[in-house]
Each structure stands twice: as C-alpha cells, then as structure tokens.
Amino acid sequence: MNEYEFKDLKIGMIEEFSVKMIEEMQNDFRKITGDINPMHSSKEFAKQRGFSDKLVFGMLTASFFSKLVGVYLPGKNCLFQECKDIRFHSPVFVGDELTVKGEITEMDERFGRITIKATIRNQENKKVCSAKLMVGVL
Image (tube, rainbow, N blue to C red; front, side, top):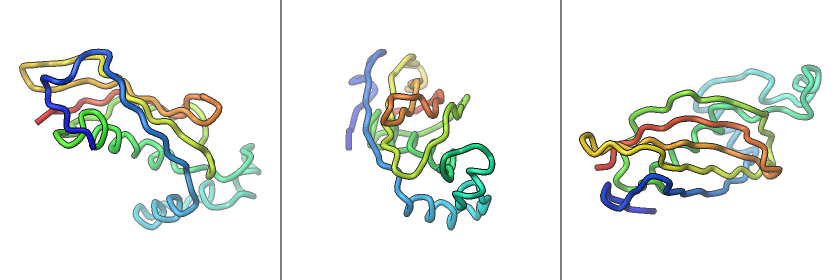
C-alpha cells in the first residue's frame, strides 16, 4: 500500500494494477447488492440480447476505482470524495484481465485535493470504463 502525502504527488503521476474478473466476484456482488438482473447471471439471456456471455456488473468493474485511490494513488492517506462522469464503454466478462490506471491531472493545494483521470482496460487494451476521481490527501 502506498503512503503518498500531498507533497509527494505531482501532475502526470501514474499508478496502475491488474485484476482478473472471476465468478466469485460476480456472486459476491450479487449477494451484497441484491441485483438479480439475469444479464449478469444467465449466459442464455445475455446471448439473446447480443452479448457473447453474461456481463460483469458495471458497478463491480467501477468499484476498482476505490482500490486505485485507497491503495495506490495516493494510498493510505486517501479520502475518496467524488467519482464523476463514470462511463461504461464496453462490456466486461468473467475471465477478463483488467488494468486499472490513474493519472493525476489536477492538484489543489488549498484543499489538499487531487483529481485523477481513471481508466479501466481489458486484456485487449480496450477501454471498458472511465471516470474522474476527486481525492483528498490527508
């Protein structure tokens, strides 16, 4: 876990990590949220709607933005304040290997806050999700 302080950070700084989407994550997310939409649990249902397999929950994918800021950028000294403009660009499937990347684009010394351009790409380097993150650095 990184422990960046505000003074350690600079615009253009990048951190990233990878995660493989597994069935257990799908099942746990379903249990936690109660989202029982068959698009996420039935391959047949998803295929009838034009997809190759059941979809990973979009918000499960986006939840890795929390790990990005809480563990990597800035890490331990993070106070996740805002997640704006979340976009789901392409579907994610169980078995996909995702790379979650964040780049500092703005810094506000007055409030000890950074803005991060966050993206998630799959194993084919296709963007699957993006957002703008506002993070306080304690």
